[in-house]
Image 1 (cartoon, rainbow, N blue to C red):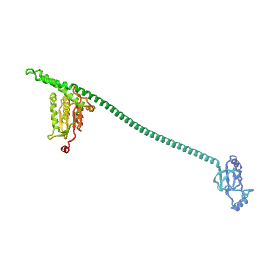
Image 2: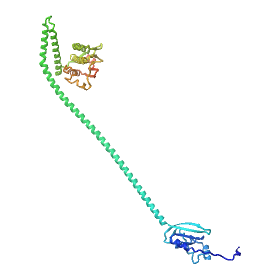
Image 3: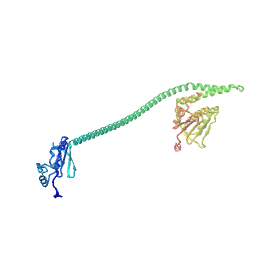
Image 4: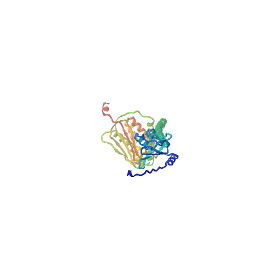
Amino acid sequence: AAGDATGVLVVKIELQALQDTWRSAELATAVADRDGVIFLSGVDGWLYRPLTPLSPATIATLSAARTYDGVDLGQAEPLLAGGAIADGNGAPMRLRQSAIGPDGWVLLAAAPLAPVRASARLWAIAAALVAALLTGMLKIWHQRHELVQLRLRQSAMLEALVAERTTDLAREVEARKRTENDLRAAQEGLIQSEKMAALGRMSTAIVHEISQPLAAMEATLAAAGLTLTEHDTRTGPRIETARSLVRRMQRTVRNLKSFARRAPLTMEVIDLRRVVSGAVEIAAPRARALGIVPEIVTPDAPVPARAGPVRMEQVCVNLLLNAFDAAAEAGGKVQVRLGPGPVLTVADTGPGIPEDRLAQVWEPFFSTKTGGEGLGLGLSISRAIVEEFGGRVDIRSTPGHGTEVIVTLPPVDEGREAAE
């Protein structure tokens, strides 16, 4: 009990050594009592300063107890009055507080903000450098990407221009080739025309020189045949053979005459059946000699056509003789057809004409006969005659299967013929 107390025991602990240690280590460390007054500190400027402004009652209590005798706590500036703390040189510091002991003491530990701020500045600078580096790298990549795309577009444009120019050059080369071919064809046509003119003049000379001798020879042989006796069986066939050769030469002369000089064009309405019949009769000796019997397919009704009868018969004979020779090479057959309309077709089952030679069959003196017979004028003369009549001649041939020659004449205008 209080009345039983006989004395007071006071224990004093010297903390100066601890304070000196904090000061020598430059540790911003301090201890404040339960009233918030710092009584132990490693920073000289903190000692005996309250953390916050003290109330008058607290100041009076401390003065009465003479806790901090000789220190005017009322005039002391609170350490945390401005909301921030600084060291003895005024540098800002970061403060940490923790309670110790049962008496409400507070341990204060402060660290300077300069290293933290320096570190923050370094990190900020490093982050800025990294950001700048990344931005630069991104910009460089973007520029490289744009440069690559630009080069790709330029390459594509260049390729398009090259392709377009190549196409233009190809068209130009093709046009030049066509022009050269046309010029070559025109030149060949001029040369061929000159050849034909020369051949015409030569044919006229040949016809003039040998027509009369051949006629005299044929008449002499005919007269010699009449003087033979019945018992002379060897001379007669020889004379007939010679006459056949002479007549063959006369036919050749007539073809040359037709090639060299065209007769006046006389046209009338004719029946093509009679033309075919007359041509078959003329060509019959040749057919018998080759062992060929032509097949004649004609309609029962007349087949009218406007043409020259003699010259149309010449066309039909020429086609028949060519067909007989072609069929004889392959042991084939010959067929003559009329219709429908004024169309004459002469077909054979001979060896045919190769495709690359079809265009040449119309040229004068061109022949596909292997025996060297004929002058190659038949088709050329026939085509010229038919074209004079206003018609056309077509050839269809398949090697190994035969040839067809189709003569198409203009249809007859019956009303016009009746009016005339």
